[in-house]
Image 1 (tube, rainbow, N blue to C red):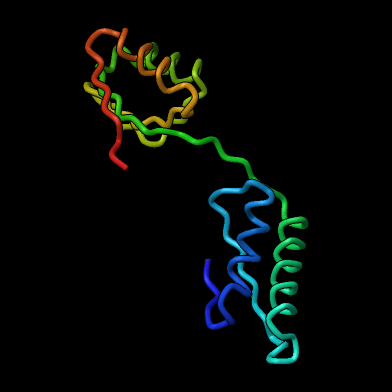
Image 2 (image 1 turned 180 degrees about the horizontal axis):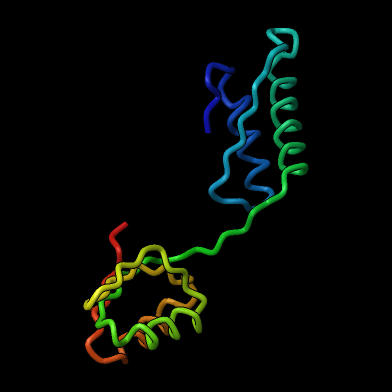
Length: 134
Protein backbone atom coordinates (compact mmCIF):
# COMPACT_ATOMS: atom_id res chain seq x y z
CA UNK A 1 0.00 0.00 0.00
CA UNK A 2 1.21 3.46 -0.75
CA UNK A 3 0.07 6.98 0.10
CA UNK A 4 2.30 8.30 -2.71
CA UNK A 5 2.70 11.82 -1.34
CA UNK A 6 -0.67 12.06 0.40
CA UNK A 7 -0.79 12.55 4.17
CA UNK A 8 0.27 9.37 5.96
CA UNK A 9 -2.51 6.77 6.19
CA UNK A 10 -4.97 8.74 4.09
CA UNK A 11 -4.82 6.78 0.81
CA UNK A 12 -3.10 3.39 0.91
CA UNK A 13 -4.65 2.12 4.14
CA UNK A 14 -8.29 2.96 3.20
CA UNK A 15 -7.84 1.37 -0.25
CA UNK A 16 -6.22 -1.75 1.25
CA UNK A 17 -9.05 -1.91 3.78
CA UNK A 18 -11.57 -2.20 0.93
CA UNK A 19 -9.52 -4.95 -0.74
CA UNK A 20 -9.26 -6.82 2.57
CA UNK A 21 -13.00 -6.43 3.29
CA UNK A 22 -13.73 -8.38 0.08
CA UNK A 23 -11.04 -10.97 1.00
CA UNK A 24 -9.21 -10.43 -2.30
CA UNK A 25 -5.64 -11.42 -3.11
CA UNK A 26 -3.39 -10.52 -6.05
CA UNK A 27 -5.40 -7.33 -6.51
CA UNK A 28 -4.38 -3.84 -7.57
CA UNK A 29 -6.52 -0.76 -7.10
CA UNK A 30 -5.23 2.56 -8.39
CA UNK A 31 -7.03 5.76 -7.41
CA UNK A 32 -6.05 9.02 -9.09
CA UNK A 33 -7.09 12.24 -7.40
CA UNK A 34 -7.44 15.41 -9.48
CA UNK A 35 -9.04 17.71 -6.91
CA UNK A 36 -9.01 18.24 -3.19
CA UNK A 37 -5.85 19.85 -2.00
CA UNK A 38 -6.19 21.12 1.55
CA UNK A 39 -9.94 21.68 1.08
CA UNK A 40 -10.78 18.03 1.79
CA UNK A 41 -8.52 17.63 4.80
CA UNK A 42 -7.28 14.23 5.97
CA UNK A 43 -10.74 12.86 6.91
CA UNK A 44 -12.08 13.92 3.51
CA UNK A 45 -9.16 12.26 1.74
CA UNK A 46 -9.67 9.02 3.67
CA UNK A 47 -13.36 9.02 2.77
CA UNK A 48 -12.66 9.83 -0.89
CA UNK A 49 -10.09 7.04 -1.32
CA UNK A 50 -12.16 4.52 0.63
CA UNK A 51 -15.37 5.29 -1.31
CA UNK A 52 -13.63 5.26 -4.67
CA UNK A 53 -11.93 1.92 -3.98
CA UNK A 54 -15.21 0.42 -2.72
CA UNK A 55 -17.06 1.58 -5.83
CA UNK A 56 -14.34 0.34 -8.17
CA UNK A 57 -14.33 -3.10 -6.51
CA UNK A 58 -18.13 -3.23 -6.56
CA UNK A 59 -18.33 -2.41 -10.29
CA UNK A 60 -15.46 -4.62 -11.48
CA UNK A 61 -16.17 -8.29 -12.23
CA UNK A 62 -13.90 -10.53 -10.19
CA UNK A 63 -11.84 -13.29 -11.77
CA UNK A 64 -11.21 -16.30 -9.59
CA UNK A 65 -8.05 -18.20 -10.32
CA UNK A 66 -6.98 -21.55 -8.95
CA UNK A 67 -3.89 -21.55 -6.73
CA UNK A 68 -1.48 -23.95 -8.40
CA UNK A 69 1.93 -25.55 -7.89
CA UNK A 70 4.03 -26.28 -10.98
CA UNK A 71 5.91 -29.53 -11.57
CA UNK A 72 8.12 -30.76 -14.40
CA UNK A 73 7.23 -34.28 -15.49
CA UNK A 74 9.72 -36.21 -17.61
CA UNK A 75 8.70 -39.47 -19.24
CA UNK A 76 8.96 -41.72 -22.28
CA UNK A 77 6.76 -40.87 -25.27
CA UNK A 78 4.94 -44.21 -24.92
CA UNK A 79 3.56 -42.97 -21.57
CA UNK A 80 1.82 -39.86 -22.93
CA UNK A 81 -1.62 -41.45 -22.55
CA UNK A 82 -1.08 -42.37 -18.90
CA UNK A 83 0.33 -38.95 -18.03
CA UNK A 84 -2.46 -37.07 -19.80
CA UNK A 85 -5.08 -39.23 -18.07
CA UNK A 86 -3.71 -38.14 -14.66
CA UNK A 87 -3.47 -34.50 -15.82
CA UNK A 88 -7.12 -34.58 -16.85
CA UNK A 89 -8.34 -36.55 -13.82
CA UNK A 90 -6.85 -34.08 -11.34
CA UNK A 91 -7.73 -30.90 -13.30
CA UNK A 92 -4.11 -29.98 -13.97
CA UNK A 93 -3.13 -27.42 -16.56
CA UNK A 94 -0.38 -28.04 -19.10
CA UNK A 95 1.90 -25.01 -18.99
CA UNK A 96 4.55 -26.19 -21.44
CA UNK A 97 5.36 -29.42 -23.21
CA UNK A 98 8.12 -30.85 -25.33
CA UNK A 99 7.20 -34.12 -27.01
CA UNK A 100 9.99 -36.20 -28.49
CA UNK A 101 11.29 -39.70 -27.77
CA UNK A 102 11.74 -38.49 -24.19
CA UNK A 103 9.13 -35.94 -23.15
CA UNK A 104 9.11 -33.05 -20.72
CA UNK A 105 5.95 -31.37 -19.55
CA UNK A 106 5.40 -28.59 -17.04
CA UNK A 107 2.04 -28.96 -15.37
CA UNK A 108 0.22 -26.71 -12.91
CA UNK A 109 -1.51 -28.79 -10.24
CA UNK A 110 -4.34 -27.28 -8.16
CA UNK A 111 -2.83 -26.74 -4.71
CA UNK A 112 -5.55 -28.79 -2.99
CA UNK A 113 -4.78 -31.78 -5.26
CA UNK A 114 -0.95 -31.76 -5.21
CA UNK A 115 -0.38 -34.72 -2.88
CA UNK A 116 -2.73 -37.12 -4.66
CA UNK A 117 -1.59 -36.01 -8.14
CA UNK A 118 2.09 -36.39 -7.29
CA UNK A 119 1.39 -39.82 -5.77
CA UNK A 120 -0.50 -40.91 -8.89
CA UNK A 121 2.26 -39.70 -11.24
CA UNK A 122 4.95 -41.39 -9.16
CA UNK A 123 3.06 -44.69 -9.49
CA UNK A 124 3.76 -44.63 -13.23
CA UNK A 125 7.01 -46.45 -14.04
CA UNK A 126 10.06 -44.41 -15.13
CA UNK A 127 8.46 -41.01 -14.58
CA UNK A 128 10.62 -38.25 -13.11
CA UNK A 129 8.78 -35.51 -11.26
CA UNK A 130 10.33 -32.29 -9.90
CA UNK A 131 8.70 -29.18 -8.42
CA UNK A 132 9.42 -25.91 -10.23
CA UNK A 133 11.33 -23.56 -7.94
CA UNK A 134 9.48 -20.43 -6.88
